[in-house]
Structure formats: structure tokens, C-alpha cells
Length: 484
Image (cartoon, rainbow, N blue to C red; front, side, top):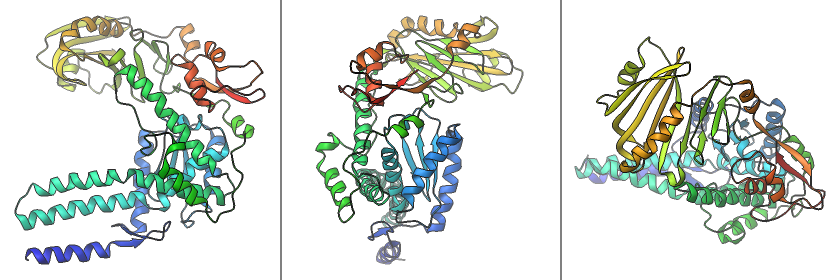
């Protein structure tokens, strides 16, 4: 088969893969039937629920589902069953899988201030599903793979396929802003048809942009890259011309439902008691200490280090990210010594230094090896402490090799801080929750922050919770979210 035949077949294949988009009416390049899309969604949803868990509050779950269904009923793909799930995660996020699986985290929900804003988040994610964005991305990625194979076959150069795949991935990522804008436009259309104000979408995007601005401040303190929460808005949403055009176009021909989301006390009351920050199931951070009631342990971290709590591990980084340490937990399957655990289970050999450990009721072993660290190859402090049939793993490293010895004192102090919980610790190890308070004439955020249990940037976080970021103050009589 010659090169022209290959290319002719490719053109026919590409043309046959075009389908009418159910949301936009345009023709899109897709390589997946609706049945295949639904099967992919079922598969991915199982993976999501292995990484996350649903938030344990049946009433809130039902509420999120009801609001989502209200918006879904006016969408372009009414034939699908949509499943809206509130995830027990501190991440500020919402996302959609193929076929109608839509997720919002409690970490985002607590920053919303009206049902209309919740509907806007869910409507935006619905837009991704109805416009088949994930399917379209899959089609482009697969096309890149096939095109690369054909070019490789006709050119005789076997590395071309991999190069073309990288290029196709770059093209797909470049569609991020276009897809986000399209989802915003569809979300506004669904909002209006469902009886919500269109401006709720811009309120949500502003909330996410404020989260991004706050994270830039944190990233500068922590010596890391900031996170981007929505699209690629380099300016404030009010000044983003493309976004304003999309939102305006989405409102044409649809009767508006009010101009601005009103203060929604009914919605705010639904948030009372929802977890703020760490969940007791994952352990609680207070100041520089970490408490886990189920594991019956307490760990102390160096003062002023940033602590990040994950489902199966907890990490901390020094100011400016000069050093890093991590604790994790694993089950013991074989009766081996702590030293054998490090050598056989973790593959750590050729120790620069090593020693046996005895920390309260925990026995273990510690090493310094030359290994892989978050900063590249260099000195790595590794240790394990046994707790019955459970092993606590410890890893730590410094950005600069010359600074390892100085930070190793902090590493060892944290390692040797592992202890059982006291009755006082158990009283401290309670999760924080969202509560409401009515603002008085003299209420201001700075005063609220002084009595808040939020340990880092309390004033900023209270403003973010209440749509007051960066410097607004509550109005007398308003219900405001506080943390207790």
C-alpha cells in the first residue's frame, strides 16, 4: 500500500468520525459512540470513588442531586441519568466524567453563597457532558496516535509516532480555554432555563479566581507554582472580554431570571455543620501537630512548616520549600524486622548511616541513603516505626545537599515525636465545621479572624468563605459563615 493510499484512507476515516454535537449543533470529531461514552463514564466513576469518598451527609447529597437534576432537565441531553455527588475532599474543585457523572467537593461547596451558585457550578459541568468535551478530547488524542502511526509507516521513521502523539496532547490541552468558555455559555443557558440568574455563573468564576489569587500568595510563601482553578483567565473575570462575550451570547433569547443572586439564607443554613478543612477520617491538623483518632497517634511537625493532609499520608514543607518530609501508613504482611522492611519492602540499601529506633511504644529503624527525593537525587532520611501490624513510613529531604544536616535535626525531632493520644489530644482532634453568625453593625473580618480556629491566613479565608475577598466587610444583618 503506497503513501497516497494511506493518506486517502486517513481522510475517509477522519470524515466518518465527525458527528453532530448535541449541545452546539456543530460537527465534532469523535471516535466514540454514546454507548461507549456511557461505559467509559461507569469505568471512570469507579476509579474516582477509589480515590475519593462521598461526603457522609445524606441530606446534603440529596440536595446537590436535586439542584443538579433541576438544571439537567433543561439541558441538551435530557435522555441521560445524571449522578451528582458531593465528595469529602478539601480540594476546591468540581469535575464531570463522560455519560453524566458529576462531582463537586465540599472544599468548593463551602465557598458558595447561594443555590444559584451551586446550580452554576453543576450547570458548567453539565455543559462539559452535553458538549461531549471528554469524548472530543479522546477523539483528538486518538487521531494523533493514528496519524503518527501512519506517518511513521509512510516515512520509515519509527520515532515520528511518539512525537506526533506529544503534539496532539499539546493541541488537546490548548482546547482547555475553549471548552471552559463553551461550558460557561451552556451553563448560563441552563441556569436561565431552570429559573436561576445568569450572573450566578460570573459569581462562581469570581470565587474561583479569588481562590487562585489567594493561592498565588500561598505559593509565593511556599516556593511553589500556584494552582489555576478555572479556565485560563489571566485577568479578573469582569475584565475578560471573551468570557463576557460568551456569557452575553448565552443569555440571548432567554427570559432573564433576575439580575443578581440575592442573599440566600436558606442555602447558607444547609451548610451549617459541614466540615471545614481536615476530616476526622483523615486526621486533624492543629498548629504544627497532627492527630489521628482512629490510629491513636499524634505527630509534631517543625514550627511554621506548611502541612498537607492526604488520605493515606501527611506531608510538610519548610518555608520557601527548602525541605520536605512525609509520613505514610502501610499494613505489615510479613513478620520481618524494621531494618528488613526498609531493605526488602522499600529497596533501601547502601546506607550512609543507620540506627535502631525506640519511640515510646513504637520500635523501628532509620537510615540516610543517597536516593530519589522531590528535589532530585540526594540525601534521603528514611525510617519505619512499627505499630502492631501497621508500619509508619517516614521520608525527608532538603532542597540543597549542603542544608541536609541542618534540617535533619528537624526531621529526627518529627520522627521521634510519634506518640499515643492523650484524653486532651482527643478533645483537640475534632474537625472544624461551618457555622453561621448574623453580622452586627460593628462586625468586621479582622476581629472575627482573631477568635477563629483557622491557623493560617484566617482573615483571607473568612473573606473567601463569604464572598468578601480581598477587602470587603459584611453588611449588618447578613448571615456570615464562620468556622468553629
